Image (cartoon, rainbow, N blue to C red; front, side, top):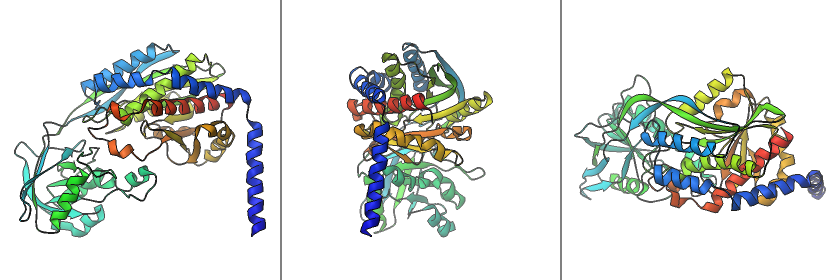
Length: 462
């Protein structure tokens, strides 16, 4: 047993030593310059300030989303780049309407109480008079199916929390988000009149979280609203004591689809211009906050990659393209349109890197690709690791980003920036996702990490 452990440690040490020996000092110095420039000369924080404070929430189809398109196109034009352009994409146009109202109106033990609430994206409204119904609490979609017609005429309250034991909070989010996305249609199938959903965060507070819901074709659409975790805890506690009736009112509705745009800027490659390395984020956000972490941070980090490379007078071998996608939040219109046009032009994305996990301190990158090519592409990162290790950057297998996922069929490597995720869902889809929630240094470190991996992929390929 001791011999086996010794052998493993020896092989590990020799492997690490071999990698260290392969490190090119020129690369070490250039990556150091990337970080120095990003931390002292970057403009991403100023760009984020304008995007959040002067424009604000940027729901697809809204005037604010178009203002963001215009602003970021102007900023990319100013760098300057080889080319900049706008790319059309059709997007849904949903409007929240007047402020939502959710309150307990009948409780033998408690009386009336206002619950903090937000309508979920794409939901229908209750009508101007609202609706009142008894509430039934469930933990899952399957529980609704088991209850069947017992939910008829009732408001179904989905109260499954994010798993607090999941160290990576995106895993916890993935384990709870189905009730928000599909809960309305499942409940409506059995006659429910509306749903309330516990906000998706591990934090107990009074800030409800919006987010998209999706209706199943052929099933009646019913109103869907999220309530804050504190309101959810209160409602759940009261439901153990007696029957509760809740009044719900929202005037949300869907308008006609609109034409919007992805914003694109690129530096043309000098040796392999047909091999594209994409960096991007999504320009749209929900309407209740300023879209700072989700995903203003990712957009300005992607723009910063190009600015930093220009400032260092780096001429890439491959084409470095920044894409600011529209409509990730409630339809993925921009990502789908981009991939469709790219496929029609027979483009090849050697790598696509998306930042859509907040502007917190970067921890590394997770990677995905077609199963036939993944191992071959990913093994290059074993050589890159020693160069980025001093900056606390790791590489792992996993997901990438929603907007770049339609590019998977091109058989390049899809990469997601992975910042520290512990506080992300405190702000995600809320009114508190503002400029003040983003730390300048953390934002710049994320941009530096993205620029570094772009540099290494461009220099050595995959």
